[in-house]
Length: 139
Image (cartoon, rainbow, N blue to C red; front, side):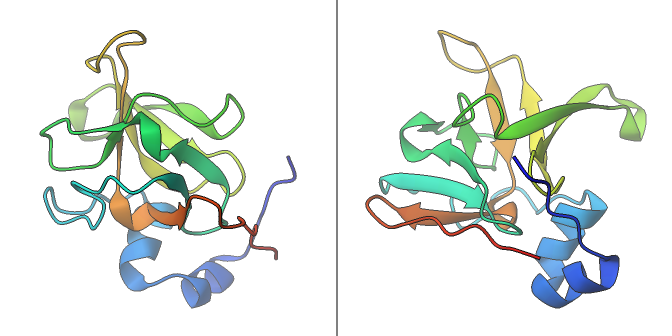
């Protein structure tokens, strides 16, 4: 997969202020505020910055945490995991494998069989309805 690398200025021009804060500055949206909480429409969740496919809607579940949660990414090369020791905690950050945008974190308290909970920020993703083409954003 070819990486998408843009200048900070280019990212600011492409993204809303909230998207920029989460995707490029590793921010977090307020719990319970995301547009994808409780949604169940079939399709694919893609990175809001570059449209890299991230999660199938069928892997989404209600975790009760205040953020949309998924059991697994769409493929092994969709996301990357990075150790995050911020705020005095040790967590595993999840980033888009294509543009390195911050998506959220993964925790080992999800449902079987994998037992993982990919806790994502709604603002970091877009939903592409089933049957619609996914067009990657280019530089």
